[in-house]
Length: 119
Image (cartoon, rainbow, N blue to C red; front, top):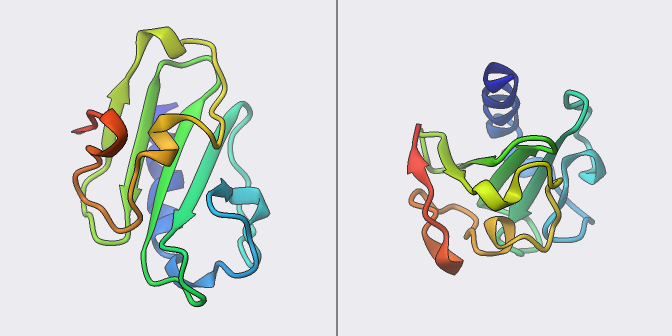
């Protein structure tokens, strides 16, 4: 499972500049030009810097029955993780602070009270 999430994040890192005409943040399946299918019960959120032609982005993923969020960005070579016991069995939403507190292009993922750590 972890390998699938890591591969998902790595694949998305290659697709930095193709998101146009989308809400921000949004789920990856709604990003125009991205033909990417996640595993069952895995949600991937994409958040860009809000520019007309996005230059930076962050990607956050979580399995609905898990308790760990995974994140990366266009400037980071690391995949970060954050385990939250209270989120066990709760699907990823776009309003989660693990999504809204992340800054597009960040490499530390500490905003919004987040405490992501490198894998």
